[in-house]
Length: 185
Image (cartoon, rainbow, N blue to C red; front, top):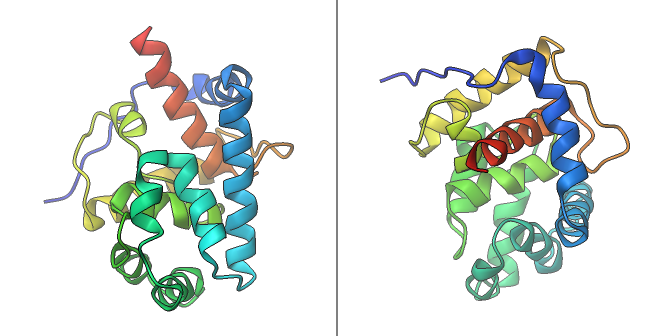
């Protein structure tokens, strides 16, 4: 079964929503995101340490950090090597990360988004709401990623060059999250 995505906010709203997301984020949220993307860059540069992985997981879910630290250094290194390899498919990268304690599909996608923000977007329930969806598995993530890449490739959201993860995909992620936040108010 192929997922059907229907963008809920107007395309013309996406850039403003991406800007609003960052403006309304508290200092702690901003710092966690900055630290996560710095850690992703370090992983991309072959620093496969727990401290980098922990910074990313902390950004998405503080409660998962105790589970994460239960993984051995060797296990973390193996998973991050596969995830950071430019030759790994999305499926291979996600599967490698799912081998780690404390990592689910949402966290795995966030790890990939920080390592390669130009290639990946995180899978988040708020973003899915903005696309009329709620299912989360690897195949779904691959379909979601393809849909989001198509949107980003159309240039309707520009990179926010002064922010962490300065890519159209990250700006789109902020826009979708902000649309969901605005709707919840």
